[in-house]
Image 1 (cartoon, rainbow, N blue to C red):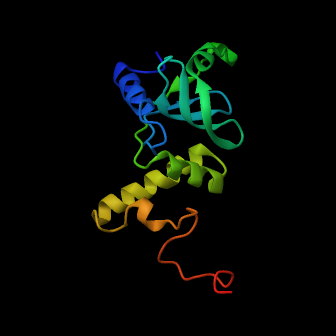
Image 2 (tube, rainbow, N blue to C red):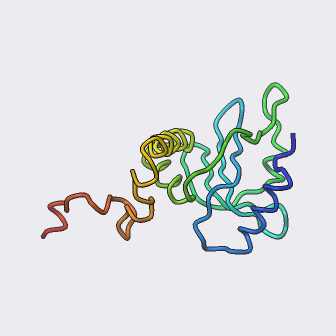
Image 3 (tube, rainbow, N blue to C red):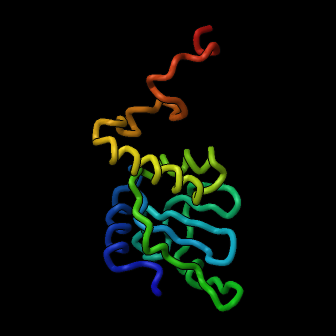
Length: 152
């Protein structure tokens, strides 16, 4: 199976023409026999360099090569795969923040997917948009009581 569908490639390229924005991930890649998960939000005009979130033991935002992912030979004749069931709901920063707190992209996806489902059951006004719930550093809820450190 190809790593990208034509629609995903088009969306990644379109996002790549708008760098600096907090795009919603377009595609998730994973290692079916071990560690390794990637969320891609952008593709450079070279059709190889993706930007997104990669987790090879510790989640990091950065660039990675589609050619390198496609060329990896894994045990049992396996290869890196595209998660055909993955649909992102939040921008990359939300997945990165959740992954750093939870320790992995996979756990972050589960947490954010559950939050999105819960919000959908409660209605569109049940939770404010994620961007409105962060302080400028992006770590605390806006409606959380101030900590004792901030009142000094």
